[in-house]
Length: 149
Image (cartoon, rainbow, N blue to C red):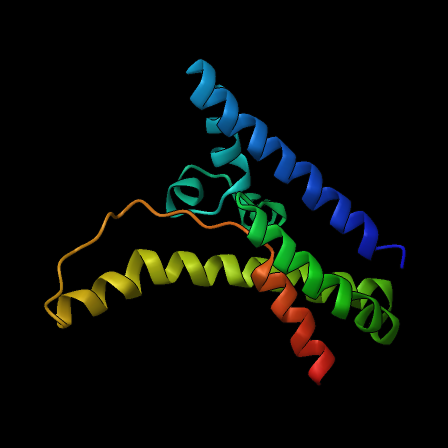
């Protein structure tokens, strides 16, 4: 599985960087690395508007919580190898990375447009308009869907 384990390793390295950045921001009041991570490894409408299109993909390699990375890694390790065997390297990457980008766009679309619209028509109070998303869940769900097909 020449793709599965390197993808897990990338996720773990970026998770470690998030943990370090958050700790540094809290402990030393130095938020520069934390801000860098948000600007480069989280998908948001702000990042898109500021031209950081790569965050649609890099956010899929980001996790901020232990349970999040553990669950995504367990599912990825369960479904990644058989899907890779079925699809081969190129199609596996197309499904995984394509799912990552589509799920990032869906999250931005929901939180920036659909969610506020639904809250208005249901007469619910507005929530904080600043939203970001990260994690491999969308990419992993793309693999589970490919496995099911």
